Image (tube, helix red, strand yellow):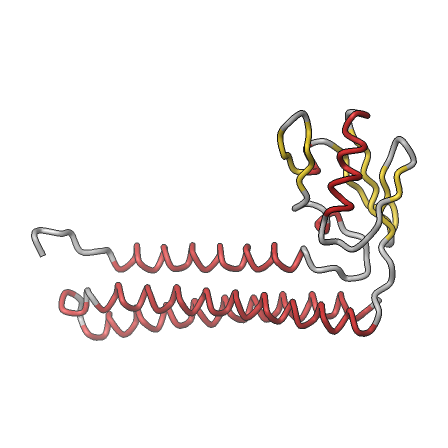
Length: 190
């Protein structure tokens, strides 16, 4: 071990907690991209628009709002960007045709069919499982790091550290389950 400094158990726990929070944030972002039948600016946040030779996020070239539960309204700050916004929306994976009146682009969100709702619920379940797998992987890495400290830490302290990682894992997994249930209700309620 050529003089390597062993990791601090508290640092291992803090790193694991930080990574688990990032996994939850990533899962939340995945959920935001799933249509619910209700208009949400999150549906178009990932769309990039060609603007003076560069691909930029839609919200950097236009004001994106939801004037009602079924409409996303996109008002470009520069009228020259309108056609590029329209093109980007048509090429996107939204499956919704934009309505361009020459000043504003509107997306009318159609009500979801029962079949589409079930597809979206499956997608949410897939994203949630991905989040849970990421959290379990973080737990596994943290436990391996702690195992390297076993000979330098008292046995009861060693067990407490593993228990804390497990409690952290359980709490973050519960949070993903809660977010998943909430998103599922959103999809099914309309």
